[in-house]
Image (cartoon, rainbow, N blue to C red; front, side, top):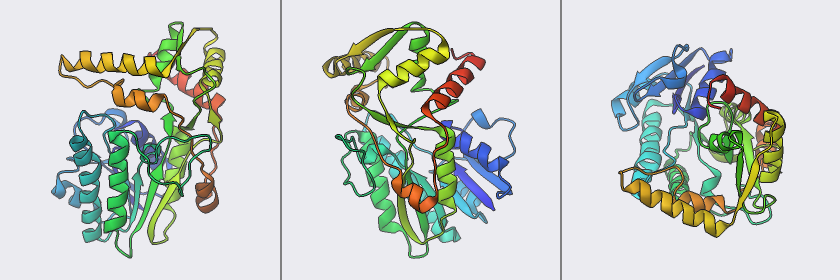
Length: 324
C-alpha cells in the first residue's frame, strides 16, 4: 500500500512514519513537508514539498495512494481564526482533494480537547462536545465539517488522543526538565485532577489499526493508555527513573491561571504567544480522562506500554539526546 502523511515531521507524525517504513504492508510513504525534514531526515520516504493550502502539492501527493494519515495541525495560536484556517479549512481542502482523486481511506487526528474535560467518569464517543479552548473548538469544527462533507463511499476514521508523551515530545517534556532540576510542579493536590495519557507508540498502533478498518462512514475513536493517572503517580515514577527526589510545589488552580496570565501578557510585549497561556491554564486545572473501550472492541486496539515503561523510555531518550 501507498500512504500519504501530513504532519510527518512532528512528534506523533514522525513516529507514525517510522512505523510505516518498518511495516511490510506499506511500499511507499509520502510526506507533505513545509520546510525542514526535522525528525524525518535521512529516512526512506518520498518528500512532497508544500503545505495544506497548496492544492497542487496535495493533489500530486495523494495521487495513487491507498490511505491518507492527516496529523498536521496547530495547537497554540492567539486567535480562533488562525485555528480555523489551520485545523478546519486545511482539513477540508485535503478531504475534498482526496474525494476528487478517489482516495477513500482517511485517518484524521482530532483530540480529547474537542469533547472537553471529564467530571469523575472518563468521557467516551457518546459524550457531547464541550470544548473549553480555541484549539478544542477548532477540532469540533473539523469533526463536524468532516461528517458534513463525507461522501457515501468514504471511510474516514477520527482519532481522539488525550495527552501524548514519548521521545521527541517537547511540551510535557517541561515537567521532566523541571523535575531534573529538583523541582516538581503540579496542579492541585497531586491526586486530583486525574488525566489520561497515551505513549506515542500505542497511539501510532491505534492509528494504524484505524487505517485497516474499511467500513464506509465516519468513525470516531478515543485512543488512550490502559488507565488514568494523577501527578503524584507520575512524580513518583519520574523520581524512581531519575534516581532522585524533587521538591513538590503544588499550585492551586487560581494561582496557575494568574501565572499563565502574567506569562502571556509578558510574551505579548515581544510579539510571541507562549506555550503556557491563559487557555492552557484553563485546561491544566481540569480533569482530562477518556475511555478506549470502543477502539478496543472495534479496532482490536490494546495499549501495550505501561506508564512506568513509557516514562522510563521517554526520560532515557531525553538524556541520550541531551534534553536533560
